[in-house]
Length: 337
Image 1 (cartoon, rainbow, N blue to C red):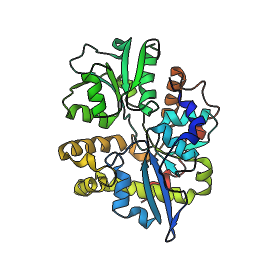
Image 2 (cartoon, rainbow, N blue to C red):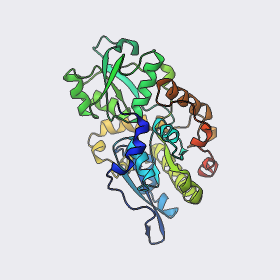
Image 3 (cartoon, rainbow, N blue to C red):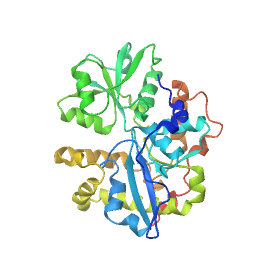
């Protein structure tokens, strides 16, 4: 099984068609952002900020690029192929354990994006019922893998001995996996659940309530970039917050859906599905504590993630200083009125 920390040795092998960093266009600062998958609706704040000109007002030109999973997002950052990335917390902590100084700057998905699901007609009622079974995942190093592994760890179940992960891909590939009986359960993200249900696979969610509070992917930079470009990060986050506030205003719903076409037009082909998915993303990106503002990092949530990863074996031990993995230094400026 591929261990997340092994991706650090594979940086040079990743082939990404990303724009060269620090390219300037008419005195604008160009930022390449690596995302783990195409996601126009999921990243509605970014595409609103692009479509409404908020980044332009801040002197920024944004180049979003999609790669294959959080591991490749981190590789793009380490290789200098992107200035910002959008990985999950598990891969980031694993990279830090390997000596890479990456920093979460903005907690975007404040609630869990992931679920452990089975077909509704199956006999499985809890994670413990999946002992000896096969769990499908979208990518081998995606954040959903660490999340679901932690669920099994809480049940005293270990990968390889009590269950197995296999990579089946996303969306329709997961549907095929269930139909062909090659998987018994699926580690799904938000869009994956919606896609399965849209394609006629009724689901039972086996995610225990205590795991729903785990935050998901957020914006990440190297510390070197953060220290040298604090003003750029402040401008970026300020535009992003404007984009998210624009989106949640009901008067701007049609425009938000239109802007999402910039990221993933296929998500907008079925407007009923798109509208339902957009509501899910509004909830996933809302602050858990509105008084803290958008992007805020809860230290207790980071402690919970770290302990889960240590328990599951994704981290060998707690990091020497977990607070170096994230920062709230820009949150006040981003949310200032």
